[in-house]
Amino acid sequence: MTDPTTVSSTRAKPPETASSHVETPTALLGPPLQAEVSSQPSGIQLWMHRISVFLFVLISAVAGVLLIILPWTPEWTDNYLLLSFPSLRTVVSNGFFRGICSGLGLLDIWIGFWEALHYHEQQ
Figure (cartoon, rainbow, N blue to C red):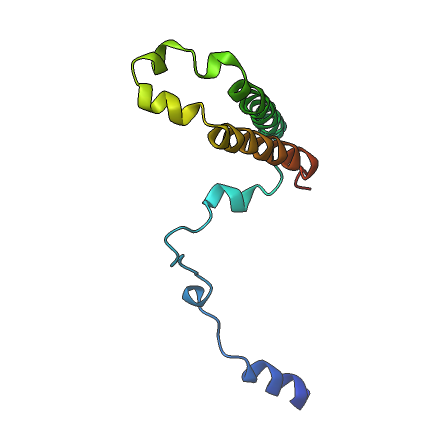
């Protein structure tokens, strides 16, 4: 004879169907299917990510330095583009406007180096 506890435990489970395990994505902007399959990035993807972070930091630093220094040079107001617009030239030569541009340069440098300091690779 069979043990009554094993018989009752096998009868208590409902039969599983294949359709109960199929999950359909309902989100419109769900993650791509390839990202779920490979959680570890390949060597090329890792280096491309490193290079893109480096270029972002480099461009941010260069643009920030230019925005800090350039508004206080004579080339800022005495250029060919502003000679034909005298009203725009007065706005650009204002100290407040120059200070705003230099502040944006500082902000740009801050963002670039913040990205560099908070860079981490997925493991």
